[in-house]
Amino acid sequence: MQYKGKAHKVGEHIDTDAIIPARFLVTTDARALGEKCMEGLEPGWIQRVQPGDIMVAGRNFGCGSSREHAPIAILGAGMSVVIGHSFARIFYRNSFNMGLLLIEVGDDVDKLHDGDTIEVDAASGVVRSSSGVEIKYPPLPPSMAELLQKGGLVPYVKERLGKN
Image 1 (cartoon, helix red, strand yellow):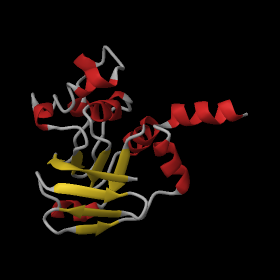
Image 2 (image 1 turned 180 degrees about the horizontal axis):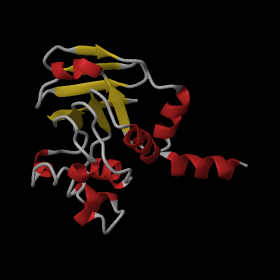
Image 3 (image 1 turned 60 degrees about the vertical axis):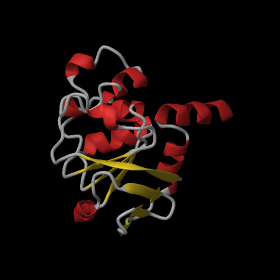
Image 4 (image 1 turned 180 degrees about the vertical axis):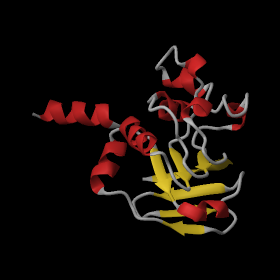
């Protein structure tokens, strides 16, 4: 699984209400949620994002409530990857269940800059940036990689049930 896009850095302890404020939770439509992604952090933030771009986050990204809308909003904004220092555990699991790749790189996240072009090779566990940075991280276990390849837990289970 290969990804390439422009880096959009956000800060530390960004909660799910900043990712997608509660007032926008009137739908589960990914595109509609994506249009309001990060609206609780900075109104109009989404205007800078192009499909395929990559979010880069600080510590404890996705803290707060356990709403699945947060990873759906990020996906709906056209981003399939978030590289972060660390993630709230429930957000981490929800993201993979929704089909959003999260990569924890600890303090190495500080080496990535807003606006860099980021390349991710998820199979080998390597992140490269246009500023010459290379970060290695443990590749995903095959089961998690398969979950992402299927688009999340629901498509994965539907396919598995269809085969039986």
